[in-house]
Image 1 (tube, rainbow, N blue to C red):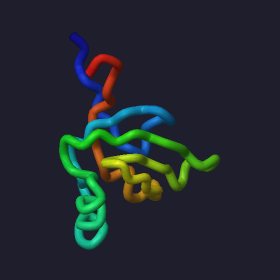
Image 2 (image 1 turned 120 degrees about the vertical axis):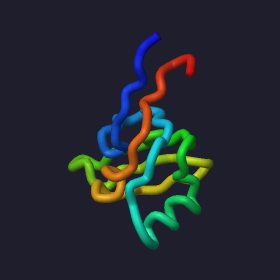
Image 3 (image 1 turned 90 degrees about the vertical axis):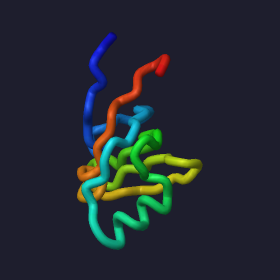
Length: 84
């Protein structure tokens, strides 16, 4: 059994599924992301990265949202592998 790989959303590659473990954001942005489904335990799919890597499109809870590096670097999770 392998140890899950902890990573920040900003480091995800297209097609990765990441289970959120923590949001290190405050204020309005934290509230907005929580309302959209970026909560601990949620599975986030990396949909698309722009050519320069900013912003990045994610899908969570049937919602697609583009986040800047500033926000996505403050959300941590575990990379899901096939069969999980």
